[in-house]
Length: 113
Image 1 (cartoon, rainbow, N blue to C red):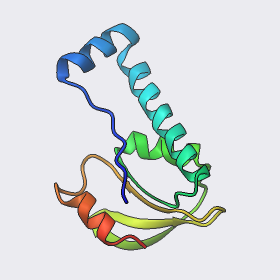
Image 2 (image 1 turned 180 degrees about the vertical axis):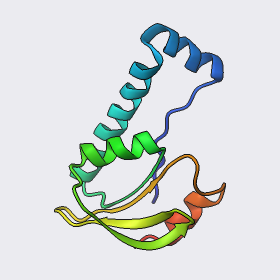
Image 3 (image 1 turned 30 degrees about the vertical axis):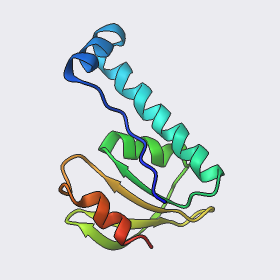
Image 4 (image 1 turned 135 degrees about the vertical axis):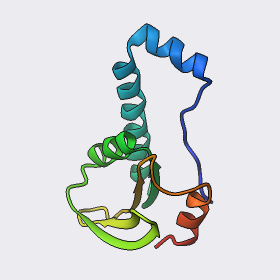
């Protein structure tokens, strides 16, 4: 079934990490790790990914070397399912933080191509 991978901490925890490494470096580190996780999942045969966060979506697309996406059905206003045109073919929902509501992930999974 579906697996959720996320990064999270309290506001104080995030502040501590940002103070130690810098805000940009901390964010880039999380994005890089999410890209590496996505690449590992695809190597293991996963072909459908829902990615939340604009920068994280970009990092995952880059890590997966996605060059072209075919736009598919709308999950929520501004967020469609997409399909990569390269190999392996991947179904991707790439959502920035400003789109979708609390039911977004359930809706995306229900629509899985």
